[in-house]
Length: 248
Image (tube, rainbow, N blue to C red; front, side, top):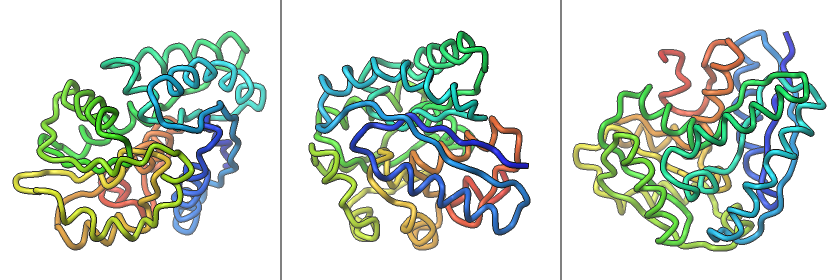
């Protein structure tokens, strides 16, 4: 069986089209399903509240375009755009995007990276979490507040304070092996190694997890898990930390 994976991507994002396919390709080495990947872009260069709001308004057009390609699942690949629009906004966004696909006569399941992260934390049984983001402190605080509004306690967080979205993508994921050590992980159930789908973390997730002995995840991993779930296939890969080990 072959599935078409659709992604609504900020124009300056280059990470979701590498990390999500990497997880699916790793899955192909152990399971029979096959995948192709298709994107539509919405303009955004600087990660500011104003640019994020303008970008979010373009997401409906992207949903129409991907619906024309009749993709089997659609992922909205920007966590902070959703979280900066107000608490619980992922539910609104998912409904609006789905309605675009219904209007285009090809109803398609929708995943937002914001909603996927929240669901992933619930599935992992998290109560207390620690979070790493590349965002400026005010946007990071919006993300922390959003996560806490969903019922989790954010014990500690790091904001790397990088405003330029391409600069975020240029960060070496292996740096996270040192960055996470600045966090207080006392009592933490899950570490979110990247709460941003532009900041690569996939290469570091399993390594950090083996070092700290608690589940490590990211917005990209949670998005992929949720896509697999919506497709009705086994939520499993050979990479991506605890969430994709086949036990959930």
